[in-house]
Image (tube, rainbow, N blue to C red; front, side):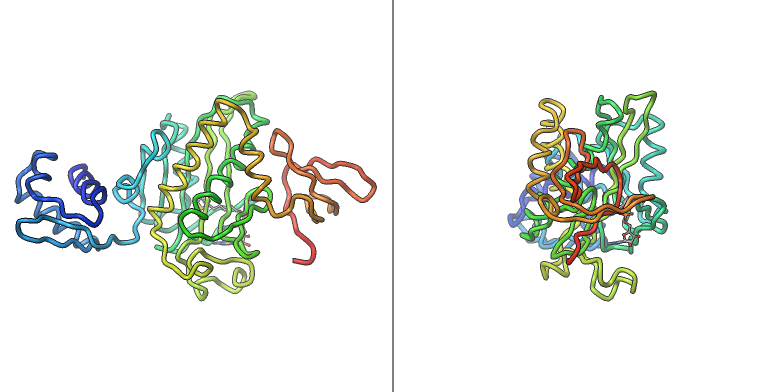
Length: 326
Ligand code: BTX
């Protein structure tokens, strides 16, 4: 409930320090007994909370959960993630976000699950989303932009997530056009973007990143062993998923704000600085052809430009790319 969320927030804001029972009961206007009950509940959820007479309560460690309360307690945004729908297990967070968006959910609404049983990739592919180890979420944005600019939002998300990952873990992720984030050449993040549109205006953009956070090496099946990795495998540290989520929302909000006011320029610049393919030879597979050439950059609409060996420039709207020799 709300009360427990506020209590958690107070304890988190004073990390490392004691918060007295008096302070809590003044701020939340509730009895000492009520506080005690909530502390007990939090302990059952996995929080380690010290209680010292005449000093008060101090949080020692928090469990790695992605509930609304856990994310909320760390949230530094104004819009993104201000409404959070948490589910323990769902088929796909995209499915839920699509439905919420259709029934008028606010911009910034976030759907998060601890596990997905039918996580969706692009082109009908699947996304492995095992329980308790990843960030499986969908964010609803409602930018007032024409349909052809919608791909820019995937690139914006990729930049925000890349920045957040490097801040939280110290790793140096790279972006692989259009929607993968790699660490040491292996995939840690995939982003699925889906649209709701009327005529040629965007009604909602639903951005769904899947991030392998605390997935262990043996948790990946044979198909993924050689191509996928996790933040824990690469950094050697367990990462608090709620902290990563709040950092992602913060980075994305800043970029989104700049994007709405000043356009795509900043995102484009940052995206190109994180991209692993720009200036390199790549192989592009679309549904009906395969071309090789040099990736020149992205256009203002977020489309990849490929220069083939005859010097022809090909705009690539949607494809899988490979970097030969990697
Ligand atoms: P994609 O089509 O680019 O990538 C899917 C491919 O990636 C799969 O065919 C498989 O080879 C590989 N793969 C599957 N699971 C993983 C994994 N956990 N780590 C690394 N590689 C994997 C990318 O699609 C977009 C994925 C978005 C997933 C999020 S999760 C939250 C949201 N809800 C939902 O249903 N989808 C999105």
